[in-house]
Amino acid sequence: MEGYMTAVVKQHPKEGADIIKKEIPKIGPDEVLIKVKATSICGTDVHIYVWNEWAKSRIKPPKIMGHEFVGEVVEIGENVTSVKVGDLVSAETHIVCGKCKACRTGNAHICENTLILGVDTDGAFAEYIKVPESNVWLNDKDIPLELLSIQEPLGNAVHTVFSGEVVGKTVAVVGCGPIGMMAIPLLKTTGASAIFAIEPVEYRMELAHKLGATRVINPLEEDVVNIIKSETEGYGADVVLDFSGSPTAIRQGLKYIAKGGRMSILGLPDNEVPIDITNDVVFKGITINGITGRRMYDTWYKVKGLLRSGLKEALKPIITHTFPLSEYEKGMELMIKGQCGKVVLYP
Image (cartoon, rainbow, N blue to C red; front, side, top):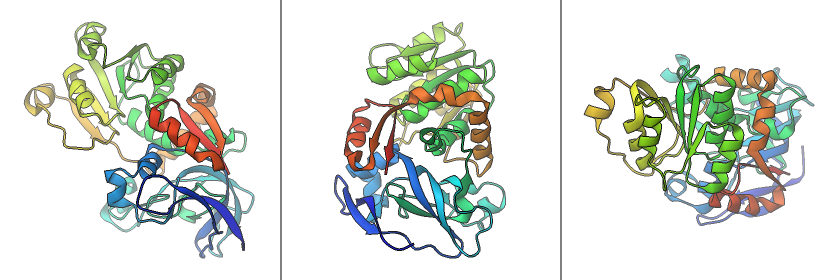
């Protein structure tokens, strides 16, 4: 396909981004060209936008931002057989090698050679995006576009929540950014006995309550450890899901987690987190899971099944704002201030 498209590009190694015209990507024999219908803002996009230390070490401008999306296939490479023009698709955002030990043992989500859409390659904040056929995910057309656009982060929540048993368990959701929020209806739908949402921003506290948290705790004003201990008969939370990356929150979680409990960590601390391994890990006999991305493609099938089962209604309140792509800065500012759930952009 010839011509030009509008795209949000990180052109320079500094704060901000630009909306410019770029050539529509040319695809190779094993690639698919997709017209983007909706794309959502991720915390990673915010890191790139504000140009934090992680972004400085990873991003090589110029790069089209964004990686969460839904779109229509408009062109396929000569070797492509699994999708056709007109299909409604999204994409697994981790492009993996398929050859390293992790890939060959069913653990491609931790591939040694991962490239990420919108981070290492041009992304989805544009009218068109090209994706390897192996990463394309065929969508159900009866699911709203805005929900299809958030399947990638929903997959992060699904991977985190279901990395262990949750049915009948008391669960602490630490950090109610968009992915943490997604965990709440997942837990409620699948039978957690109590859901403690730990979040300091009032806007997100209110949304966590609306989504079904049993108790919402402000860690800046309340004693999280004592509250959770007192409301679990002194045992503590069976499961702690950290989406915050806050060193303080992680250390607190290790204090109120029950013996034999499970902590799954998706949040990324900026620095090392000192913890009392002897008393809070070994003597408690707990399990700590590091969560990265989505299991490929087991998590995607779980997401599709959950959306088909009716979870889509429970997730709708998470999408709080929509803007045309040209107003991406409004979405970025809301994300920076924590005054939103999920923000969806329409090219």
